[in-house]
Length: 250
Image 1 (cartoon, rainbow, N blue to C red):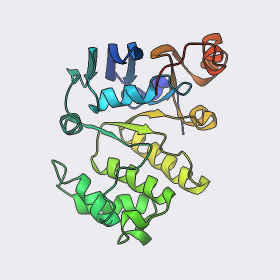
Image 2 (image 1 turned 90 degrees about the horizontal axis):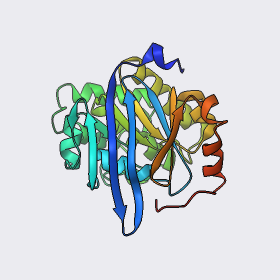
Image 3 (image 1 turned 45 degrees about the vertical axis):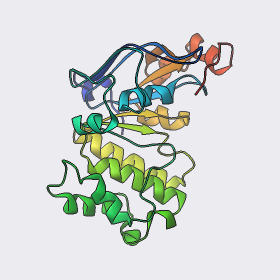
Image 4 (image 1 turned 60 degrees about the vertical axis):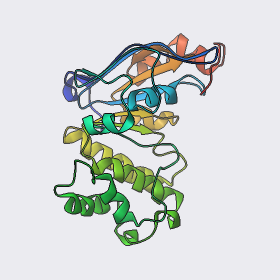
């Protein structure tokens, strides 16, 4: 499923420079610098409170930075509202699925394509149902789905946007191994067709097997980046996970 960075990646689709955001006296993003190249699957790891979710919220427009740049496809999107970021071609999932509870699975998928992605939306929704193996619950309300099915639907909504960059926030956390396999197979297919993935994940086995490159955060900063075998023996990474660095808020 994975490949070398050189064989799958192009130029950068996302570049973050000196990104800063504080909450009170806590620096959740303390001069973050990183890049994600086209067609990469990049993992973002770090201990709890390292600033991973804050970074995703800054990139997707959920919160505003206090300084720095977020270059997406060459445009600085720092401070843009979430809907404008989404229109520019960035999709994301959340740890807790953000679904329309009283709408059906199909309606949830179609609603994700309602603004700017409507052409061919119904056919695309049928393909998403098939690929994620949720055809049998297509008419069920989102609130009536199992936790794993809700994760699939959340991912399916991101797929409906046909975004060149997708942020996945622990998309496989707490799901059955079969559902985990379905999601990862879909990620592989989409990457092969040109989609870039940037994902937060705590499952090190998944990170090892899926990600081309890994970025490690601690205390609001990027402390290293590289292949799994490189970061696994990095002394700063060991220190971060053993809790010998200052902790920050989530």
